[in-house]
Image (tube, rainbow, N blue to C red; front, side, top):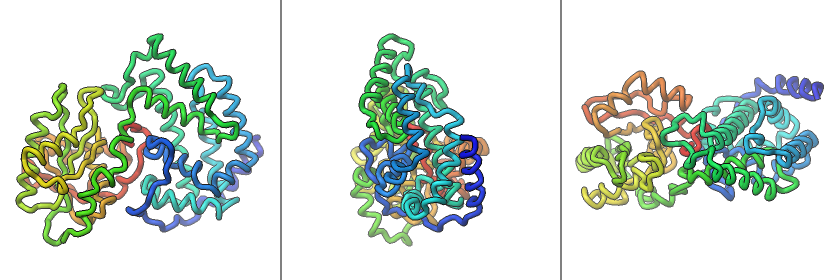
Length: 409
């Protein structure tokens, strides 16, 4: 095995300087459909490995991968807990080297995979990297993301945001432990004999999210359908008439059982005033099922109701972004909406909120948090000319899927 690893490392060294493919992300790209939308949103690499016929055949017939498929199948049968299905560091490192080696040996079969990855936008943070680096980084993201879920929802530890993302049950209770054992049994029973090595771990991770009612990232999908009227309207807009492409209104959770907070209503009133002045043709309301924990209300859904029913804004002018759970992802997800719908990304977007939140967005603290949690700045050239308005240029790196934030990747 040591000789195999040495050869793989040598091969990888030989391709590490290959130029990156100049394939831009495509707003018209249609995701390959996985059985579970959570998989697509969190680890699209695994969807591609499963769904692309040529790549799937290649992986099925690969001798080295067959050994690892057998190893993980045996590990699954012997597992006494879901955490036994986590990818260990040696496996993560080994496959970080394996995917680039497979690329060099089978460039034709792997080309479709790479084109799909680059066109999807889910790997946009690595757009300027070589194909080998793109594959290696995508694998690292997927493996660490699955491990995060397996650890977090079996032990209720390690969360970035424990107050809103934690398990829905007391994880040490006999009832929850029984559910975990049943989930492990189900994964072992339903995993096909020829399953690829990552599939049992992936199935267990998705099962844990569903068990804890954390399917937030799959709700309202696809957004093209949820926002179909607005997306249709985008195609006919004369953009020269508007200073901004869209007005972004971040949500403000009520912290109670109320569907919308007073702060959320106030932000909507400010946004409605700017819309009536002709500042932008659309309002993006952003916010998911956040506060209080387990709330049935999505901030964006309730804000749209308020804008349309109370403030009489046309429904086709209000775009739902019902997933964001933080200010960082309010901005990031609005950029994704703008790109996917066809809005001009060279045009500035206007964030409408209260003075305190906008002061935060325009601070070094927010910039630092974006870098630490996202790996980039979703907004560039931030300008604040008023207490309640702040404009920015969208950053296309916002398309990058974040597997370490599984409720809104």
